[in-house]
Image: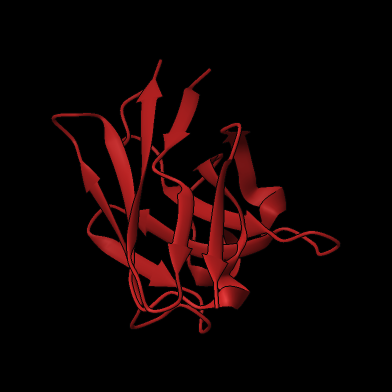
Length: 125
């Protein structure tokens, strides 16, 4: 069972940047697809981005502003967030998927096998 620990969240002004990190233990980050989801108060958890092999996937709402990447040597997955908006405010969760697929698979929270504890991102206007 993989353990995931997120870090890097915080308070930032609109237009600013943050980089989230997800350190994995118990499994290498390149052995399973990895991803990021987020959940705002009163809303369902939503897909943000995923990485599988050399392929990356981003939701329409963050494409062009957020980038998912992976450092195999550090066994860590990152989410670089730029041009942040107040609507990006949420708890961000790192995810390890149970199996491989495509965008239609990775965008579903039911496809996730393990979750991190989450890190809060707050974007002020």
